[in-house]
Amino acid sequence: MTTKKPNFCIFTGNSNPDLADKICEYLERPLCGAIVQRFSDGEIRIEIDENVRAKDVFLVQSTCDPVNDNLVELLLMVDALKRASARRITAVLPYYGYARQDKKVAPRVPISAKLVADLLTTAGATRVITMDLHAGQIQGFFNIPVDNLYAAPVLLKYIKANFDKGLVIVSPDAGGVERARAFAKRLDAGLAIVDKRRSAPNQAKAMAVIGDVKDKTVIIQDDMIDTAGTLTEAVNAIVERGAGEVHACCVHPVLSGPAVDRINASPITSIVCTDSIPLNKKAATCNKIKVLSISDLVGEAIIRSYTGDSVTSLFV
Image (cartoon, rainbow, N blue to C red; front, top):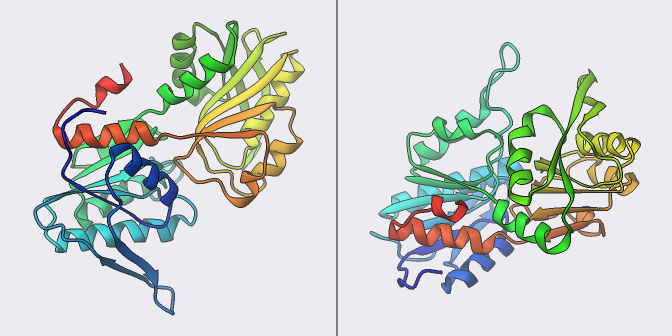
């Protein structure tokens, strides 16, 4: 961490308090107090317990499950901080919900990622720090500065320490090829792609593996794992092609619906993810899942954002 003594406030909602505590520990600053509760009818009640007048404020809140509750908490806290005369309000979203709805894929559907960007700006956020956006162009949905961080340094450090050379990095679909190629380059590893085709809505069927995986240690790389359908289909296709071991790494462990059951039933050896989203109770009991913390990375981005130092240099 840089040596310049920070002078700002850090708040959090209810989405990921453990990560917020770790970020504060890295920054050697206390987490500021706020009341984030519910009225009897379910409406969210917000009250800021600190004087933030003319101060820089960083608000840590992942818009994960329950997505809508956490999003409204974030918006109300930003509004409360704005009305309390905070100088600058930076929304720190380790996981940006609704990011998958970033374009019109059918007639008469919303572009939800753009709407969330508008809501944050209208509420009063003056900057956004987020991590591994599902689509990079979402940065352009904002009319305020956006720092899109990458968990790659954390994941790459773990992979280098725990796997021998001769790895093959696999993209589970065509959309993730660029991300997988970047990992493969950093690790001096091979690259393969799973050709995924849909036989029906919400049913992914892996049809072919492009690249050599026979007798190799394979790591499937993706930005998020939601229901684990794409992941487990990719694992099955790779195992059928004679891979030795199959692992996976992702940034955002959404792990909704049947995800954990699918992972347990799959021949996958391990999954490495980050704490951008707290594991749900079922996922926390799965011994195939290992969680790495992004707290130091996010904390360093916060201090650099405050001091005006380069954030991009963290990933060069």
